[in-house]
Image (cartoon, rainbow, N blue to C red; front, side, top):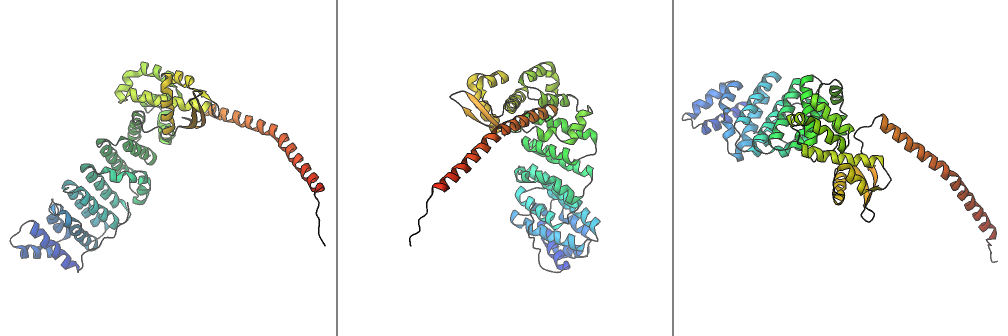
Length: 401
């Protein structure tokens, strides 16, 4: 979140309370405004908030909303007895704003002001949760998307407990899912798996959900970002992920033909997980093409080889290769004349003993090639030196007197 300059109304504490009290009296259409104002001037902040909340200030016109709440924030932050009291009042204000949203954009600005006024402690998390709730209610979640990747940093700043992290992350994930922002919901699940270490049962639920999200979301192709998370590996190794763990293992190690056999044997379990089998099959086609590329780096791969591996018509191969390149899984060049693709880079779904063996073999081949080139380079260097000496001997320099 970006800091913003919040300017409070001028005046002493008593005059600030009086000004806000008169505004509340106006909103509530209180006939004896002077008496009401005098009572609030002598009242506690808790009593002032009782009059200000319950939708009273939240119903202010959009043009006045920010100024009115800035006035309230000034009173709460300067006249409260201490941090615990501020915490209580802030939660009350946030809850009231969240429940009585009139203009989403205006309320988000007010909450953003409040967030930036507060110290970087757990109380900021309460305001952030309110921001998420308001954004979800008013279809403005897109404004929060850049903050998802920053959540681990924010958690560190707030120093909040694990339970608070879980509650906030689930709130964000659920709001994003409800808004149809599934890629962002998946990203939030990855943050959950990166930052939460307690509650194994909840971790297993989120990991399983993330695996299903991965296969169902066409735009998400980086399996490494999920499969290499320590929490996911530990849960899967311990058998805590059940059918979702079996699905992950298949994604990591199988090709398209193996995937078809897996689906045939586990269709009921996949449907129970919520897997879209058609989308998941297309994802496996992309991963299979990436694996073919990884096994044939620097070599021309016939379209027919790809077509057979992913079980599509030969005239569809170009489209699939383009999709794999767009997904960032491989880099390479297609030759339409020879109907081949030359992969120059490819991602691995997993990098284990087999992949290390392949890498070692390639390094050995490169070393052998360089050793063969070394005599050629040495001879060329020697010839160049000899030619330079000959040319120097033939050169004549004449100096006129």
